[in-house]
Image 1 (cartoon, rainbow, N blue to C red):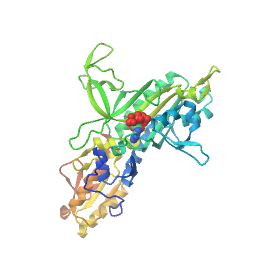
Image 2 (cartoon, protein in one colour):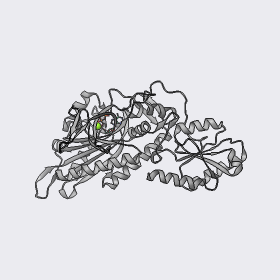
Image 3 (cartoon, rainbow, N blue to C red):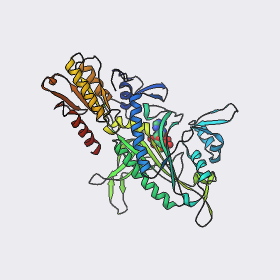
Image 4 (cartoon, rainbow, N blue to C red):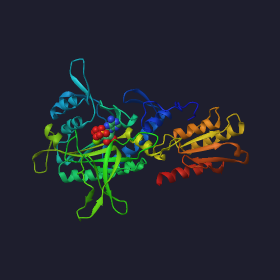
Length: 436
Ligand code: ATP
Ligand code: MG
């Protein structure tokens, strides 16, 4: 991609309505545009990031044995009346709903327990078909009372939601553990440090549930982005031995484990990026969703559900990875790997060397941008830092001695390399980053 063609417009001013860093930077760096309250267009750079996060999510979900499908966004009220959730969601004001031309009420899906249970009950008739885990990655709609913080709390947002069906509690317990591990791996691959905490099940229901929190810190330059209070305890080695959402935690100063060892409790702010639930038979009983068990008896499925905020993960990654100059994407979810900047495009040698490197990078399979604009080098560097390309190659004065400069986004000084080694060095650096 050439910057002259790239559909991106950076801005130097901080948008007035953006209170947290991820919102400010995603707007300034040209990733998102607000359409209306809590609703954003994902511009090409943003869409690349979201696609990368989605690919990591699908890869890990598939590896865990789940199958991807795609359910309708439009949901009829009758289905939600079966579980009694229509009135509750309408009352809470969370449901985006309207009547169709035949005056039948419909909702834009805020979550899909009813729809998936309806699909399952028509097909999963025997214990032999269980367990089954189905998931999708889709836009969800919730008329949030306080949409804010850009992608962190939208009224339209992207979620991965998965639902599992089991013949026994032991089988659900096992899947729940597998999902907990899968979630840790997904967040780690996205470059996020997350913490699994005990939580309240809220409107989804069920007895056991855990949230995955990305802990945030007070930033001098922006408002606190973590909306959840997390309480946790660590042992001497720093390992977390207990963690809970404060809504769930019994308020005290100490956590005492089963051996009687006590640990001081610490308080932190967190962004909820995922939430897993053991639903039990709440939906299957209400919707008469049953299967024939091995002994011939008819039983409701025992269910689990697993949500993960794809667009919120992108924003949380920005909260964890930025500096005063802009975004610092982890390689795995960066929109591009590399930008090549000829310091002066009017200099034939620099322009040609940059073109050659660009062609080599494309050939090596790298996701590369060539900043071919006739702008001052300083302007191009500022944009590169703001957008947050993990690597920048500068073709400038050192070309006279056959060298170019490579600079990882967070490095203070560039490394000088011969033009012939540049792309090999870049490829190796990117591989190392992804393994680290
Ligand atoms: P919250 O407590 O933040 O309102 P929730 O608990 O209602 O979220 P879930 O129903 O658990 O949300 O949805 C699963 C995941 O979807 C959440 O863990 C979160 O990552 C994401 N998510 C939920 N609401 C939003 C939103 N308004 N904007 C962006 N992501 C969201
Ligand atoms: Mg939740």
